[in-house]
Length: 283
Length: 100
Image (cartoon, rainbow over all chains, first blue to last red; front, side, top):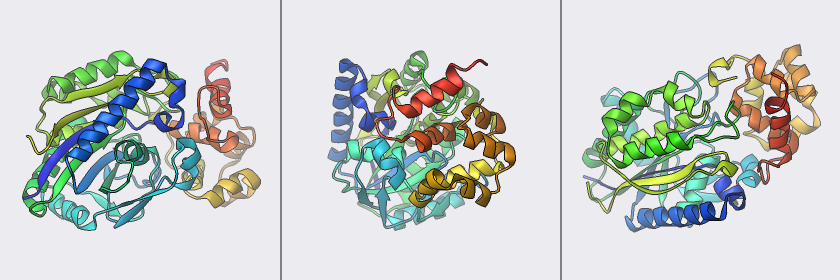
């Protein structure tokens, strides 16, 4: 029996590493302190592997073939993909993978009627590069990435993502090797709309509503009300990335999380923040 | 313009998808756009939109909105992609300030 030692979700927008100085001084302080604390909590949970869920941004899953979930089976990853490096202002890095954990998840999820695509050649943009460089800047914790389709309809529902998270949590506890310490990290959101009608806006009211649902552990209400239409109204082509947050929330059994930080950073064209459900193996 | 209006089969969507994945294609986008568009089989209306850097027309043709921001960066560069960057300003000029 492996142990789920940390369950967390964070926004990954490129402005955090690329142009944080354009946010207000208070927002810069809030995000720097918040992500530093999230990183400290993640690292102090001493995970051997991070299973990450994030929007693919149509970087690997082409429009002619968009599975809901595609897991990475490589033994090592490099990022950011070259064209994204100056945008993110992140130098090339490498991070270990964990093929055995990835393949076990594929096999076990199949048994539960959840088919993950899998491949060993995923490219990373901001989706994993921003969380890795801010939370684990030494890139020394293995990553099993799961790229999701959040922005090419039809996309998986919040309920499906929550169910996937619950099953992943079960598999961690029941099928991964004893003693293995596992973190589950969702990345994406909060409100934003890259290239869409609200590209230069965020929806602070939505963000605070969504975070309050998580903080209060109101998962049933969230699953009922976070329809794709509701998410899209808060940012057509970006806010549905919050589907990735329902995965760790499902693994955490729908319980309440601590909102570590939130900033309505219009200058970054994205509401930014992070939450943590549990650390240190507490459930 | 929304993610529901995307035409998944549009050749230009395939071209943009591939370009961001490969720096050699990024260079071709700059140096040999005509050859690149021919290679991916873009229609004449798509080619005209790319020649004219006409983001509004690209959106109407069914290019994914997420790609529109990346197309502005292919034309104008990605670094320091703030609101005042050339890439963001190109989007604003074409799709925010332009008459509906």
